[in-house]
Length: 137
Figure (tube, one colour):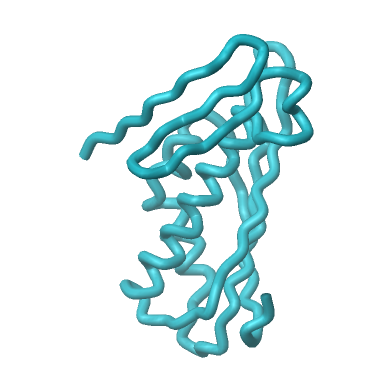
């Protein structure tokens, strides 16, 4: 399987990535720092997307139902050399299904997620998954 994206930027302005039919703007200047995601935040967003995609994937494989899931990903940025370190996530899975096995879900997310596996090869990633009752949003 192959993936691709195309990105462009305007000097002293902003940049964007085109992936399939999606257009994602991101910041490249101090002026856009409070308005648009920066590359580090997009990186954390891809980890979030990987985790949520795998909740959906494993809900079928592990035969459990959930109403929705929320994930928060945080990281520490090191300065020399500049890189992400100590990435952590908290995943909330809203489900009333007694067959939801949190430990197995976490093992599957951390062993079979493409982005998570890529990140694990260069820095630590640790997480916590909590089952939340009901359909609270």
